[in-house]
Image (cartoon, rainbow, N blue to C red; front, side):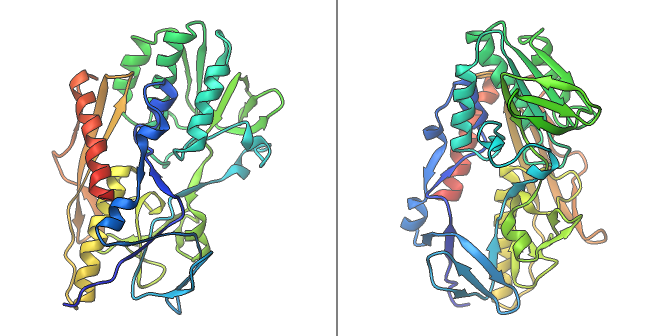
Length: 368
């Protein structure tokens, strides 16, 4: 068939990786280490524009931008990511958000949260609030606890961490994280399941749970509940639980609008499919393959998808979880392949080498 013209519109000037960004909090990475230019895509011949999408007209198949002229499309791929429901926590208004960070999108907030931790006195308390699943990166909050604990152990050994988890238990890699918390970080971490933060007093940095428990912090890190990013909502693509975007798992095409393919964390996840960077990368490949087939008048075939998530327990010791997913024709969704995937038996340094290589490879895969 004819060549397909591809245009990428990205609102950020550079890519900042969420995977590995917790290491900035531990002091083992700088944000610059996780920042990759989009110039590699330009060199590969992809028209890459720095602009923001204002709206998508699904009926007219056109997209309006902040700077560029309105553009028509045959097919459009959107990856709106997640946005946060700050309204779920009373007191977490725009002013409070300047002091009480989520740092759940890597970038300036990651750097600022590290600064807050550095400024905290030895003997201070770091409080992390985790939303109910599903959320971006299931093991991410527990890795963050390890990274902050690692920093405290080295620099502020009298400090403590309180984890307010809205979930009934650790969502991912439970035994592996508990081994670190009860081992090298013994006595530092107070983990409280079923602790849903509903209110915040920003003046005293106090989080209030649904049950009325008041937890005071020196550094308070609240990750609010999230759903599909604002662009998805504006375009009418949010059609699952009023939170997520339903997709056809063969093509990643929206079930709310034809010709629009939706990738990444904003999708209504298939059973046991995490919201992860590796998974979003797989979504992109499946959508691209399907679009080529559709534009050439052929029927797309479902692809297998794999996932890997590495978690750093300290600077070098790492554990992984992996899974493989296939399309189930009867269920019309992705399901995990029996016997696939797995979990580290224990965190180890060799997997630290693998994790760093994985990061470099996936950045190169996407951006060069």
